[in-house]
Amino acid sequence: MGVVRNVFKRKMRAFLTIFGITIGVFALVVMGGLAEKLNLLVDGGVDYYKDKVLITEGGSGAAVLGSSPITTDLVAEIEAIEGVELASAEVGMVLDDDPTAVTFGIPPMIVGDDLRWLEIPDAALRIADGRELTVDDSGVAVVGADLVAMLDAEVGGTIELRGETFEVVGIAEKTLAGTDTLVRVPMADAQRLFHATLPAALQDVLEPETLALQIVAYAADGVDADELATEIAASVEGISATGPEAFQAQVVDSMAMFNTIIFGVALVSLLVGGLSVINTMTMAVAERTREIGVRKAIGATSGAIMRQFVAESAVIGVTGGLLGLGLGWLTTLALNSAGDASATALFEVTTRLALGSVGFALVLGVLAGLYPAWHAARLDPVRALRYE
Amino acid sequence: MDPIVTVAGLTKRYRLGKDNYVDALRGASLEIARGEMVAIMGPSGSGKSTLMHIAGCLDRPDSGEVHLNGRRVDQLRGRALTTVRGREVGFIFQGFNLIPTMTALENVALAAEYAGASRRDAADKARSLLELVGLADRMRHAPTELSGGQQQRVAIARALVNDPAIVMGDEPTGDLDTATSAEIVGVMREINTERGTTFVLVTHNPEVAEVCDRTIHMRDGIVEAVTA
Image (cartoon, rainbow over all chains, first blue to last red; front, side, top):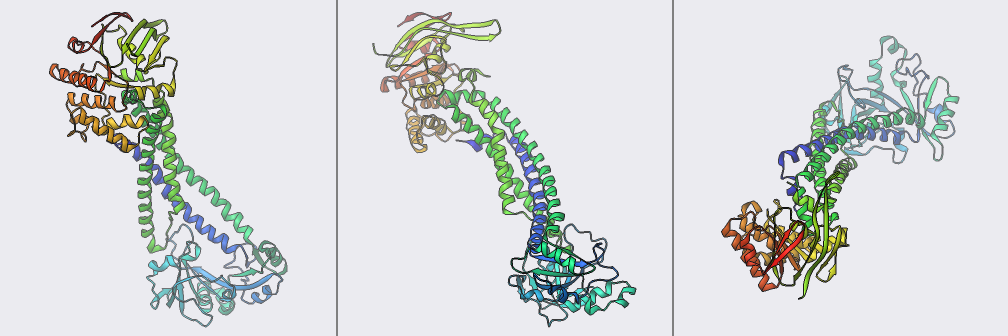
């Protein structure tokens, strides 16, 4: 009875204590939102790579400006390898060469490919508005969900890509993964745009029509993509073939470290908030010693006293948690919309993050209340009644 | 005589520090009859509050026997002691001791809820008792919005809410002026007469003792005399 009223009787103290939890949960929500967004990108990557082998030039990694970039001619050669269901050539480049546009996450890209993967069931991206590209298209584009605001794109309208005008035929559905920041154009258009970015010496040597940056080999059913990568690397000269394991090793494992650090920092600030709850509740018990004596005199069991103070502490925790979630969520919305112009939606407050952070604040409130409540419950009623 | 409280040979020593203690009770014995209204008087430190606390199951004696409403209670501890206290005894204190964040109604209902009543039953009982003590129009008021006499009436209603066999008051008129003091004692006497509730009042006030059936005089931890 009167749990909430008791908490807010000392308004300033209640506010400060709740604010401590609020700051902790705020940090958890904002930083967790960042981690969750990156996790989604990584999950999207893991999902994308799980049955594919990426074939790029050389083994050195200097794929773009190497002496003999891979060409579309390789597609047939790779498809001939046993275990390859289909191979598809791709050309991609960053949307802007502007060096000041430093982005965190995946930068906006222009990508063109031969669309051969459309034959793979379920491989197609979902289109939110308009249509998918076809092999006969030219001068058209499908825009990723996060780029709509930045490019001011709408189906039927036009956008500028590296100085050329493209008609927007489709807007891709939001996937929360890397594809949200892609503009996809027909292969020939991408090849021409890419060719124009090459140094003059290379432009003379390379034909735009056969240009490719990477070839994606789709593993046939039941074929292990990592084994297939080894197989492809062995049978084709001058290329590097990467299976899902390499992505796992490079990105997922470093993500785990990143997650640990981010959540660690947020948890530390929450623990500080938890300590202030312990302090507040201990003071509340001391101030209300006489009240505790009265409650016991009129028949309260130790359990009832314990429950009451734990409940008050839980109210502090949950109130702080909800405020922190609200503030954090609004902050991520504000930061995301500020980033809209450059397509850098960095935060994603997932349901599990929201529930988890408020749940954690509740558990913290309960735990922080346990000791003061236990102390209150075992007060001797006669001494408590005499307490001035 | 049908005794509701019998205490025999109670001793209680409070330790204040390492070789420093107070013998609050040194073998106090007494009987209180069902339906009686008695005052306990005596100088400060004579053990009257300690006697009342032990008889009311708030505290335990070092030795001696306590029978409350036909049951031996001096051996009880923890939850069992709390249960007997909640059901058989009602307490009224000098400083009223209402819970400041609760309304009059909630203060009274709280004691019923502690004794296991449902929220609705507790509120119903609380309402009828507040009517009994003449506070029908003050039920939603916070203690700070009530006068001293009104607060003590709420405390009396709270003490009665579980239909206890006995109500114990520790200086129940100590913070009240003479007129209000007489009024509160009058309320208790009325309840004593009409409902047959036993009252034991620790007091310094001879006017309170005068209203009671008997007065128990204590000195140095024992019952020195009983006057009618």
